[in-house]
Length: 350
Ligand code: NAD
Ligand code: UD1
Image (cartoon, rainbow, N blue to C red):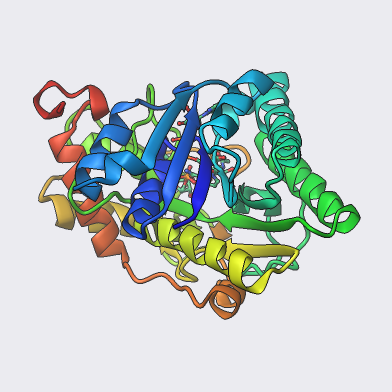
């Protein structure tokens, strides 16, 4: 049993990863400010993990940027932190354009504080949530990890900056063990429908938007362009089931512990692209609901295609995605239909 600090563990990807790690027998301390999440997610995680899992999860409410919060989290581990998974951060591209300093402060400043606290507490093993956004407009599809890092918005710049900081650290202090995981498009939910994505306000991303249209919370989807150079004219992305992504984190931790690489940089995606229209049709089939849509102009900053080459992750981690688009939609609908208002849905609060 390892002890792992999870920053941002109450969020969408963090909560699913906490469940996978608890089920693997690990002890977790979550540090989260709940700025974009709800503590109810972690109560649900404990219910799903069952039995005595509550003895293996400590939740600390606090901000990553405050050394005192980090010290409380490390104190809860009683001197033994085997690894940190660093999910905490802000991720809304449009907000990052309007509030770049906030994004640099939370995503970069927060990461610097975390790394300093890790060093103070003798923990040098880290999994960092990076994003396919660091590739900007990719030149070649599928995208390999060796593709240029050329982000095109402040959010992407903050992810690239932390990646750079981690590479510099691994070069100068060779006892660090770091995985930089570049997620493609995480969607879906745990198949129980008890935890899932819980955006505050109107969703920015396609999948939660389609889910909320299907459940009747939003009237219709706007498809951002049907004139892209793709087979049906809509944008193509590599959607990855959040449970596959969560399992990828466990695989990365095990490789950092067992093989001791200094710096891993891996795409976590399926390698399969789906168009916006394919997602809409798959969601309609899974939910039995109609998803009304119109066509709007292209969104600034969008690329026609973004699809991972996941072969390096498979080679290094022995991990690959197992769940297809139909499963993503079925599980996403299980969550959305039972929680039309997310964790604040009256009927489903524990
Ligand atoms: P999320 O918003 O659901 O989770 C982020 C969590 O971090 C939340 O629980 C939030 O309360 C917490 N947090 C934010 N700022 C904090 C702070 N200063 N101190 C403490 N806690 C703080 O987002 P998510 O989708 O689970 O994303 C997790 C990570 O993965 C983020 O770093 C994000 O940039 C990255 N990522 C997400 C996606 C995606 O599409 N979901 C894609 C690529 C990368
Ligand atoms: C977006 C971000 C990216 C971030 C990723 C995950 C932008 C420009 N890019 O990527 O930096 O890493 O989310 O958080 O914001 N779409 C619609 N209608 C909608 C929403 C989306 O047609 O209401 C289309 C988009 O044009 C795109 C596809 O659906 O073709 C997927 O969009 P989205 O879910 O926002 O993900 P990304 O564009 O890949």
